[in-house]
Length: 323
Image (cartoon, rainbow, N blue to C red; front, side):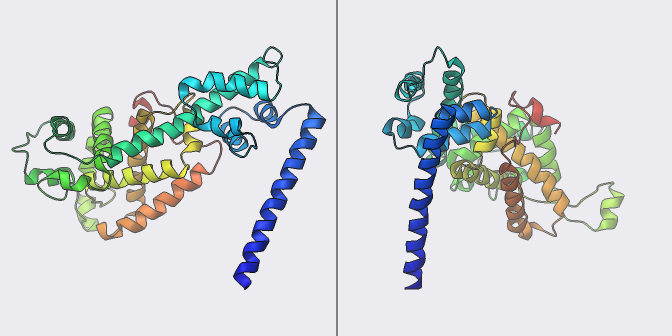
């Protein structure tokens, strides 16, 4: 009974607040002479703050046109903006900047949805050792990470040297599918110096303080590079799907975020996790889940800031190498 009453109160509060909000919007429209979309575009700076408010306004609107505008095809955005302006009785000649601002926001909103679809497609595609393209990507990963060490054979214990669990890496891609391989190869190719350094650091075993001081190393770390990369891919994927990365992408990508943007974000997360692992100085790999969860919470907290951008810019990996 108590549970039912609590649910009833919550439902009543929801509709009450929704009614009040619609009344407030009506009053503001009468007082300012502007609709909510105009007020957001004119009073909120470009970036995540503006785009997320526009997205909420469109999604919660009573108008079917506004509700569906967040999921239109990119080619239909310009026509959709014209329809919105007509619906709201806004003269584009008197308010030229509004159309430009709405178009920029819709490009980001629609682009984010499409990015989720692209990433999900890669995640669902299983690694196929009979597919020449898949095999080529895997062999390139070895070449980028170990340029001076030839791979003796496709099935080899050497794969453990870059952090896979056995002699055939294909079994490690089950959770994230091709997405894990795409991200690892991107990191190894576009940010080769840093990727090789992270790999080298990850191979160091846990030693006594005296041994590490003798070797002039600050920390004793050790983890499986490739497996952690796949795990960080899972983290990036969940941040994307949950919407947490909207803050980052809406502040960084001036138009639609792409798969390259996602992969560059993965590079950043690999950098940051590596530094975080060193700072935490875990006793062994058994502490991985604890460290990862703590790292995840830190990233999510950062992304709650509407002005947050994880990476400084998206010009290839130039801004990632010396972070």
